[in-house]
Length: 216
Image (cartoon, rainbow, N blue to C red; front, top):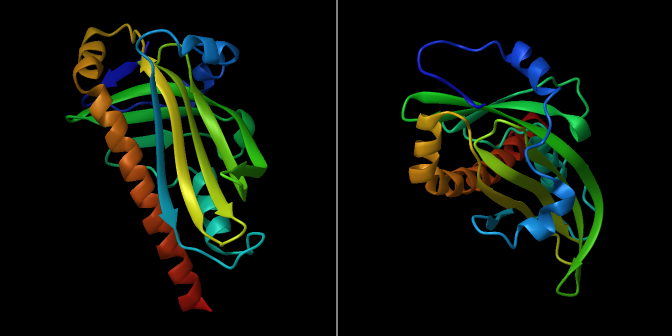
């Protein structure tokens, strides 16, 4: 079950060890079929980042910078959510403990990365270099679903963007207060999370590139 804390802290390392033995609370292979069932939300968010020269991403440019921020999960707003994980664990199989902040409460739930991607995609006749990864909800989470985080660079123009694609529905957290809170406010919090994540990715990318220019 998801945990709720008000005053006491949590042993993140111990919780991560427990989460590594936990299974997903949905079947990713069945997701295309599951989406026809009621209660699922499909969301797409995107934010333009600083552009660079057309062609392959440049070393240290906006695309590479955003990729680093995305891999380290640095674009999330700490006022909304914190993430605990072992940085030595490979991203493709990383287990994460999420600390969700809501009205002074801290709600803990687990997710696990489902893989990463680095390659090319074509959209509306345009080719892009895309890097991304996803995570999926574990048993006890108050949601079921998957979130994909992607950094795109359009090879023809050099435009760079950050995308969040999510599929989710409410799950039984086995805690009445968490269940009621998510039923009443969960949808708005999902949208707020994605919006602030896109805004922070754009701001952090600009800030990191500016700092490099200052140092050079």
